[in-house]
Length: 357
Image (cartoon, rainbow, N blue to C red; front, side, top):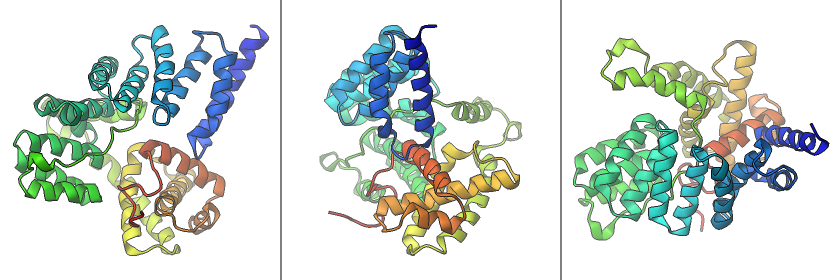
């Protein structure tokens, strides 16, 4: 193996290590650009760099991100992440029909990915006005990711657009029991008015691109027998799988939050965010014992800091970590994963309690 290839492989390992620990995945952009220049066109390292560059640049520079996505698809025409990233690029550029076609291609390779189905349905409903065509995709997404308030809102919107307002209210009500946002409240008001088309409720932008991880596949395989008509006792439900872990996380989170200067609403939002966090963290923290307990504490600390981050509370990571008796490095690593998974931003409407101008 030549020295250049070895250098590229070592740089890729460094990037993977950094991505696993970075608070902001965008911190690795310079390294990814270097890897793209260093690696041979079409090599695994080059495609790795191109795909990550496409995903990280998609919102700030969708045209450039589309070029990187096309590089991946030129060598891997069935790459679902490549197609989904290209679809999101085209959505942001206003090329909605192209985006719909690209999401169809992504779903051909990853038919169980709820985020692709959600984004496709969202586009059909909101961008192209084809709510009837959107219902099936959004229902599929909702069945796999009912915990997502964004997916529930999109599904409820499409149901209302085709006149199924009572169903839409039920879907939205379930979502609001888990976590209510200003968007949910506005949509509920719109539904109560009869979902008038001349005052159509604006929905948030499409969900960020996510690959279907092994964890998601496992959860969907558990749910599949029931979807096909299996008996209730054939497999445990997602709620049964996650309830003990949620109870443990709630307990640890509650203790830590008691030491932080957060109000009741912020603590409630933290509990809601913790439930959303479990969709990502279930497997990494499901083990028990001392190591499992430490992992739960680190996730709880990350959840608490996420509220600090979203609401601009003047607390440092060290101050939050101390309340949960974890290291700053553990909090930082878990928060980085959580921020990337939930696409958290300062003032995030899903979890923020402070209205900022």
